[in-house]
Image (cartoon, rainbow over all chains, first blue to last red; front, side, top):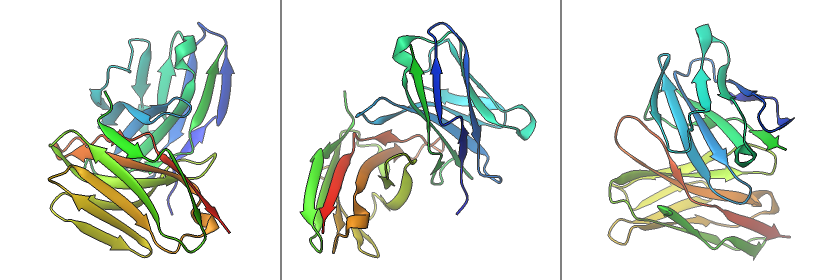
Length: 113
Length: 113
């Protein structure tokens, strides 16, 4: 079936540096999401995005986080600067409608050292 | 505060047995409950879902039993196979037109041949 691609699959970065996580959503999907999963815990909602705008963000979506999707290219999550507690797996998802099921990517495993 | 709870944390069954995975929730406004299956190194994939107007949903060997009054549901995997070994996440969302899921912490299922 259609897939969401996440690039890179793994990233190690020094604390304080900037990191950009890239997501290539399903081609006809219009809604995009980021979730964060710390090892052994549940996935937690970070943000959703539609029509070029953030619709809703959670308390986990700190000021250092930002998302964008310039002109149909990758949907990105940028963290600047990174902190140790940002180490997690970040899952991107997309859906065709706001109330339709997600397609998830395989995640980006981010390690901040 | 965990809004969606899953039990058990891990479950081992023999091939051919029925695996029963439990999920409970707190928010009465939740009305849609997808179950996601995740294999190691992959993103979660939608398995089966139920709306709160139903009390049962079947798809192949997977059945959801839903109890709105008790705010719990269970996923039954009939005739479990080793290929069903994965982590299963229960999720919940409200019908706000701005879907975001609240996930449980998952049940790690192992099916032994």
